[in-house]
Length: 295
Image 1 (cartoon, rainbow, N blue to C red):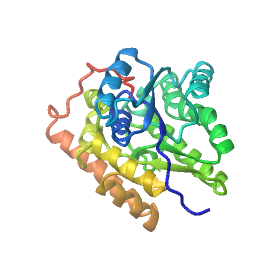
Image 2 (cartoon, one colour):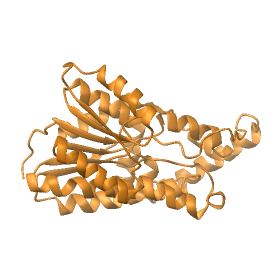
Image 3 (cartoon, rainbow, N blue to C red):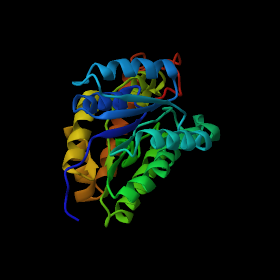
């Protein structure tokens, strides 16, 4: 089917109370969209609503908060469906809710693995379960799943988080094909390190080598990522890779294959280890942080 101009009338964003989700909600607000934001913290939702409403060109625009934990699927899905019964079927669904804990594999419990997967991956599945049937019935809509650079290249310190984001890639790749002959589109986003409250918390507890490795690229702003996502939605791009470095890495991995990438990653890890050995205090561990910071 040919491309149609995407409708932006009603937008649903999980994780919309902070980080990339909040920045994206502001972008849609500027375009006049009605917005549903999902978040589990009531105070953060209230602050986010205030920030988003300031971006409304028309004060009659609506923002609908939904306080819910996307990992509590048996509660969340009925709540979301009740909301949609009232406000209608979203034109755009952005799955941005996520958590992480940067730590080496042996330092992460099975329960922590499970929680990260329940939020990042199954929370995305739950949102799609509640919205996709309605989109198909209407035969229009666009689902945008937020993965990560760690969702297409394995990164030390992110075995749990990376696995959840790789799962999103597998889900989205399969959905793209299943929906190929419909007017429901899908996109996958691979943000690099992004200046968000979640990254601030990560940086407090990253293992030294992971902290040194992350210095290979400067974090981008949430606004830059949001702008790239919005542009990708308008162009109906399947892959959205914000930032020049991310776009280049994704292109090289696809064009050259993983053969040349693995030696580069090996070299980067050894370089990070040398940095830590030469400046141990610079990369000292700081455990004053919330390991389950939600975006």
